[in-house]
Amino acid sequence: MATNPEFNVPAQLVKELRERSGAGFSDCRNALAEAKGDVDRAIDILRRKGQAAAQKKAQREASEGLIGHYIHAGGKIGVIVEVNCESDFVARTDDFQNLCHDLAMHVAALDPRYVRREEVTQEILDHEREIYREQARSTGKPEPVIEKIVNGKMEKFYEENCLYEQHFIKDESLTVSELINQMVAKLGENIAVRRFVRLKVGEAAGAPSGTSGAASGAAAMEPVR
Image (cartoon, rainbow, N blue to C red; front, side, top):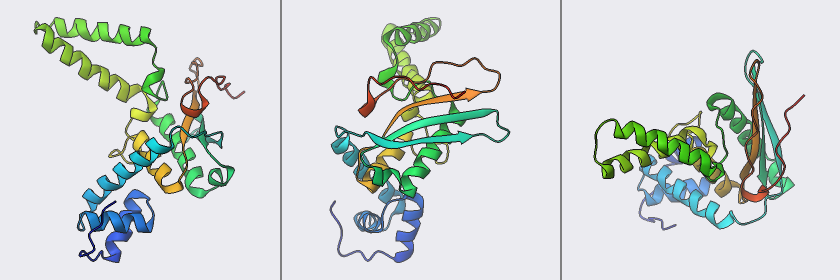
């Protein structure tokens, strides 16, 4: 990352950026120097760095990790989620444990159906597209416009139903994918959600999410009894 040696980064700005981003001291200082003290721009720089780091590490095996859990107040909703990393050392850090808890809490609140968009079956995608296409046709719009509308609605479908596409419940300026990328950059290991299950009192148990990332093809998580 290019820095601007002529810009003297105030310690208070570094502190603010660390609190908002969770990134390390040197990364925050460098991002602020590049952004010439603009905290919002520095956050964007850190996000790009996190995405780049995640892409480099995405092919590395992540077979360690933790089972995060969250029970909503009143005990009516419970979530367990498996989050993988590369080493037991990282799995034991406070940052990783907090991430697992936050992801479980997020699943409890927003009830995603899948981990990633790649898990949505073609049958479901075709069904959703046909519904959106019929809705758009009823407006009398021309076919090219209809396809744009359908594509836009499909992106919204992914955002509402896929964990990685959803906006993080504790910071809606971030998607869950961006949150995980930030943690990849901070902890230096590949991190991926493998699977989760959400239970709600009185509801029939649905199928747990499919597997993805480093754990592709593993068995589904059994509901807690």
